[in-house]
Structure formats: structure tokens, C-alpha cells
Image (cartoon, rainbow, N blue to C red; front, top):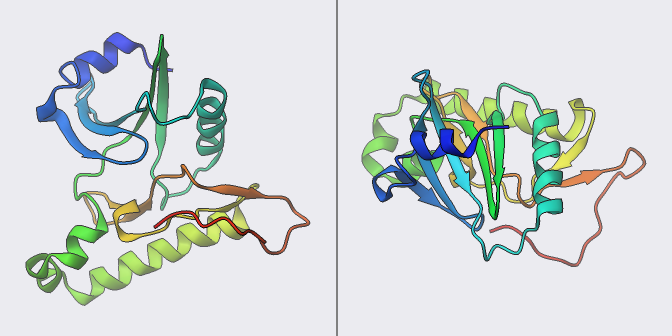
Length: 179
């Protein structure tokens, strides 16, 4: 658990200048801890509809997933009505910037493309088969693949993820989720 004052200090009181993105969960800020470590801070939007119970369940799920191709959850913060997730910071942003930006895409060597695809596949194999929990992400897209300083891909955003029981071999659903 992170202390709320630590998060306030790390993000300059959630300064608009610190904001690096936003999603269905709420805004995401870049922060810097007093140790010098960069972090990504996801601040749950008050109108997201996610209650304390759901938030704690999501934190427990993500905390159990440890793999080099998944974004690492460093901790969380619950303070009054605030619900915050703290992740490792990914300096090369998301894969969609490299796919849909013609200049970045053409300057990225083929070996990096292969490295990224292989890392995503490894992360999915871990989620589907190798972890103690069987997880289906349900929102895998280029903007949910983040890239670290070495362009190692990390799957992020597990808000729509679903756990399969051991006896389940396939998911049957009528509900469409993700994008």
C-alpha cells in the first residue's frame, strides 16, 4: 500500500502536466517517488462504477500475476474516496504509437517487431496456460501493450480480464467487451 501523501508528492498533486493518458478507469499520471523511481499512477474515476470490493478484487488478481511481459503492479492506495493503482512506468509508451505513427513504424527495425510480437505471445501464454490462474484479458489491443526502455512489451489494463476455472475449456458469453 502506498500512502496518499506519497502519491500526491509523486504526481505534483495530480498536475495536468503529469497526466500521460486516460481510459475507462480514469486518468493516468507519471510520477516520481522520492527514491527517484518513475511510476505510472492510475486514479480511479469516481463515476467508473467500480466499488471498493471490485477494486480490491482487481488489485488481488493483478498482484498474483508475475511475468516479464506483464506490467508490474507496484501497489495501490485507498484514501477516503480515492482508489489508485501504482504501476511500473513504461517510458516508450504504447505499441499503438509505433504501429500508427508512420515515422516511428518505419524506423523500428524488423528484429524489434519480432521481439515485441514474441513478448506479447509469451505474456498471453502465461495468462492462458502457465500461471496458477487462467486469465483471458478480453481487451488486448495495441494501446494496452506498453513498451519499456528496451522495447520489451508488457501487457496492461486488466479491467475486463476474466478468470477461468480449471474445468473450463472455453468461454461461452453473449456479452461483448473490449474494443
